[in-house]
Amino acid sequence: MADHFVREGFVVHLIDLRGFGFSGGTYGVATIDELHEDIKLLLQQVDTNLPLFLYGHSIGASLISSFLMRNKWIQITGVILTSAMFGFGHETKINWVKKSLIRVFGGYFEVIFDIERA
Image (cartoon, rainbow, N blue to C red; front, side, top):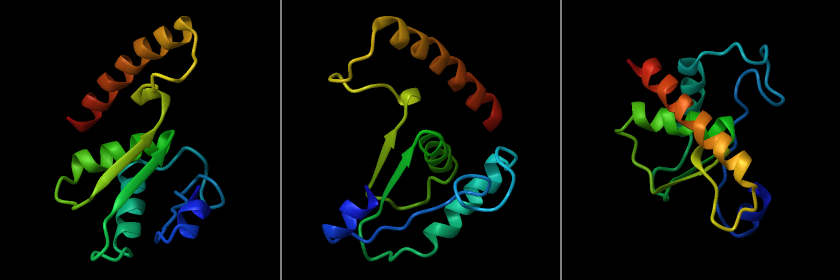
């Protein structure tokens, strides 16, 4: 997807969070605060004269969401989050059992995030 946006003339910055992808570190041991620091470091490198959109997929969507809730001072143009925890488009074909389970567990995760912020 990044290649597509670059071909269309967008400036794209990618992040490989510690413990994920090709970065160093052990998978799954970084704290939320450490991962938020990775996002802050990336944002220090962007051109502030251009519109800024943040895109997060899967765990990245949760990280971007929690990062923005904790850093309301950041000036952004928009956010794109793609994750089952944030819901599905109307055109998405998922049977009602799976949708129901995701709705139930999605609420459970919201409670966890509220406790974590406190």
